[in-house]
Length: 487
Image (cartoon, rainbow, N blue to C red; front, side, top):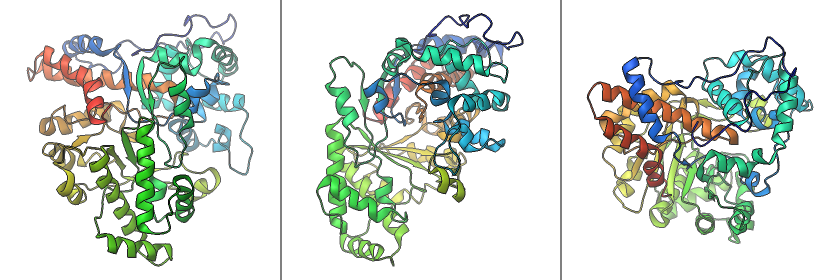
């Protein structure tokens, strides 16, 4: 796995700590490489070119406080289960209540970490075939040195062993950052955040890494949210600019963007339901703003107008506009009411880009200052819409398959769908998009293996030479994320 080395001897589980029936945990060295023997040999050689390249993580959700405070992880449930909605959503689908996954906020108290870990281990077999299983196996084996698979009979021994290991200096967050080979890590931050953790890292002479914020203004742009007015009040408090009218809100957002740029930000991120934008004259936008604040205007139209303002600002200040669209958030109202957002019930929806992006691209698509990275959960638009758009507009890069599509076969479908039209170099490299810190190297390694396999098939078919394939693979893991996200 790229950058990561076992934290302990994989055979180092204490004698007697697991059942004699425990199944070994040993990810295959050729995992995800082609089954065809000729292609597999080519893919092995290609993979070796990038296996240990530094990791560029231009979009993710790791809390910067993790690295600023550098506190040890308390236990394996806190590290691998509770914060990972890829894990908790599937457990929930099999009847494990979210409070038994450790999530707070419901009517029941969150289960103790040991109980959470037992629930995870006893349901380990349910992750077979999922991308999560591959990431978890790599995290457990390559990062944490685990030699046996989780199971009901190994749960307690693994919990005790991992809790002890996590207290060691080499498994603290900063040490892991170094061992993973991360060169740059982008976080996702609210415009009202004071960025004190980023500032603490920048001012710490003992810290040699690079962690940059990303401007995520969704709650201030989405006028359909019930808490939108309260969010504008908070923005006014932080920026010192009255957000009671449209122009004031725009100025406050501009001021906070400049604050983020001063702290190293290179991009903004938007989880809008769709990519549609409006570019109304200011007097019309001001009138619409007043109507929505009064509770009688078209809030969805105003939201699209504010997203258009973000594109306009990006054409002026150079922050890359990353669009992550096509998700119906908080699909289950009762779960949202109990546990809040990001708890596993956001569901993909259809997307449309050709008409939706035309107003933005007509204004900024050929502007050298403007840059956008497009991600969607609707893979039916990869070849029909996104590849042709990126194949013409110099400002457009295609984001890697994201969220439900950041799985090996979906990654392959993405390459098959877009490359013949847009090529490799109109894509943004890999985006790990994770809250699970220890999954970062596992996810990057998955992408490197999948892309090595895809390129190996093209070499075997004599579409391109192996030297060219090796250079493309290096570009996908270095040049492309740096270029697309201005890193």
